[in-house]
Image (cartoon, rainbow, N blue to C red; front, top):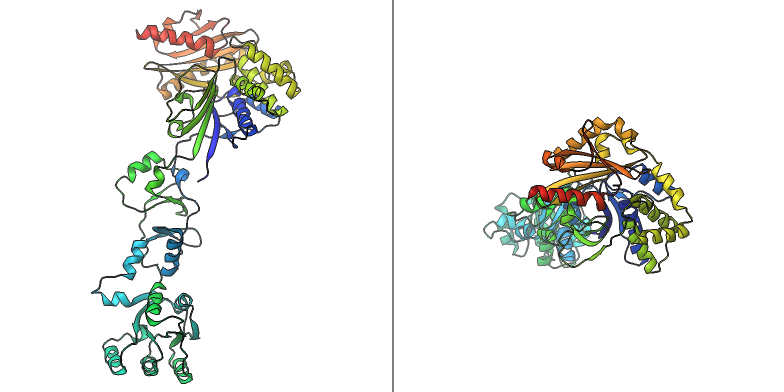
Length: 553
């Protein structure tokens, strides 16, 4: 299982979430701290794509859910045997790799079942009263010759798989004859004998299936000629009789010992579900198969308690409600953010950088600057895009002197004008005009918790309000639809005019909260006018949480 670390922003990412993820991945790489992967857990938009295409940087990998699944813990490079394999081949793999169980897989990758060391043990040590089972072997002449590394003198239908019975010709010829006459199994018998000429002759005359001469002893010419005449296979084993007998038994095919019923899971099965399903199972291993029953991997109960190999670094947020689904089930290594604290509990101390600046991209760029690391012009440009977008090109109320200083430093590295880049970003297109109403609501959508209340605030930046007024009704309906789907106390959307630095607020939900808002209200349009309000983080969220506290009291 390979370890992966993803650097990822919040759900429905804005430009700063994408740009800071790309920039922080470059920072970690420049410091020699591995190769973390920048990622996103939402769709891109026209402004993000403008920034990325301007500096020829690809859109980060999409991860919609990080919840640990079967494919995250399964062993992919597993050992297996073919349905036609012999016991010796299975035992060799089990012994060489210290395994308890082997999946049985055909040449197409399809799972046929499993075989364990215990299944093989029952084969080699059957119940003493079942003498026939102790001597039986299901195999072919070719398998026996290969297992013994025997010298073949005469082989008849070597590839035919059949039930055979092993006997050792160790008794006197008179006893051997009497013993043999009691069973009509000569054509299924394998006789192991040394240089007992009389036993060799009697066996061939009786029409046994195979004669094995042990001890690497020679065979008389007339014996060989008789064997060819009677259609009896004859080989010379380099081992003594007892060892030869055991090896022949080990040459038996595993197909009749295979346990066809296995406990299977799909690769996308969540570990929380798997743990519940296998709590009382005594299976040695669990198989991960695709829809065609092809084996993809396997795992044991021990694998379920091992640390998940996927790890996260969160940027531009620190609340689990805003994080990629499943984030609480994997290890969070670091957080880099500039928002209010709502950080998740962690199992051990982590690096947590939270600074009151206008953009997470500012923090990342400042880390490059302080550590005197080489910053590629393209990454400098990407970080510029994040800062410009989040601070409205340094005109927003969250802008700090640090943002101003860092943006100027990035301009010198990227060889770009911040004002020119800002014009490109904010002219990239209207989300309200180009996207479906619900996509607009969810484009920069965050869920917040205040006491027992959950609410959401989206933000859309436009060059004027014309598109808002044109799509006012459908946006209002989409806002209410999202509120119901997410089971929220209320849902709000701040539409900001970049040119005038004013905003309009759409809100749907609890009537008491809406009635408590003190900003001018356009009753006919059910919308609030927020002059001078452009920051969700610094201006709107503190105002709304204050209303909620009063309301709850």
